[in-house]
Length: 212
Ligand code: BG6
Ligand code: MG
Image (tube, rainbow, N blue to C red; front, side, top):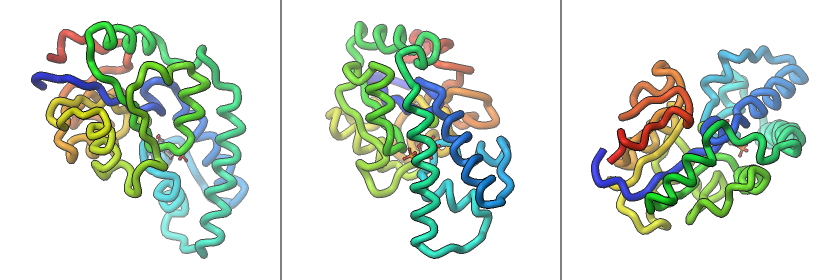
């Protein structure tokens, strides 16, 4: 990791624990549809799009496009119900301190979430003003693990990929950042983010001295 000029943050599971709300919403849908869905199954869904998540949840069952759409809409309705309660208190510990610190050190900051709900979540968390660029699930066609979302963020920031570091909690996100040619900070257990250049249990543990 050398000459880093920009930090690109994932949202769900990095700055706030919406990963739990995604899980609750999928679980509720799965129960209604008589499909078994465990917390372990949910681990594979971390970071990936709504449609790809549904495909994994269906475990090979084939449904009409209309039914797929109905299931995705229903899940999203539940998710939106859960995120209504989000406020500044739901920022993970030290997340705001880290963003302030990075600003003070003149790093450029972007947010790149695979979620189409990211703009609402960021507003509720009160962190929109930290980011020069915000891109989300609706900004590109192919989201994580494709590199497109991160490349789009870097382009909008005006920083070449090799000078960007991505902060991610999902394997799909680390894979996406690596394909984009960016440095990576993994948040979570090594079983999940082991491919990252630096790994910490949470954003509160990031030591900026490790990044140069
Ligand atoms: C990611 C989450 O940020 O967004 C995934 O980690 C989620 O769990 C994906 O499936 C898409 O979110 P949404 O809100 O567009 O359904
Ligand atoms: Mg995430």
